[in-house]
Length: 142
Image (cartoon, rainbow, N blue to C red):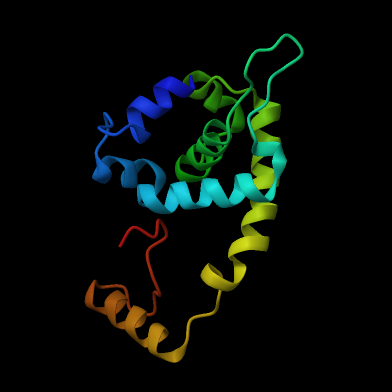
């Protein structure tokens, strides 16, 4: 299934363009790949290995794609099996480990409180769109 994921999203000429990628994963492809690289480097659970009979196991790309599909669509872990062919327990373990790494690696860069200028800008945008007092949209796609 890694081949399908690569053909759809990560090949040189992927089936889905940048706009579709952003719609599916709620972020750009370059940020997604940066996160995959950081997570894989931080936790060897995400490194692809061979099983006891020599078959390649799941890659970081497969595990993290499953995690992002759950987060982007709000679907349960067992739904990822249909597209990615990854079991529910593996998806849940991937999600838990992904969260740990993201908090460790990105908390200072992406998880910070907005400053007064950011709050004022977001409140103005919300007011202009007819939602006074709202700091941003729930899906963060604005």
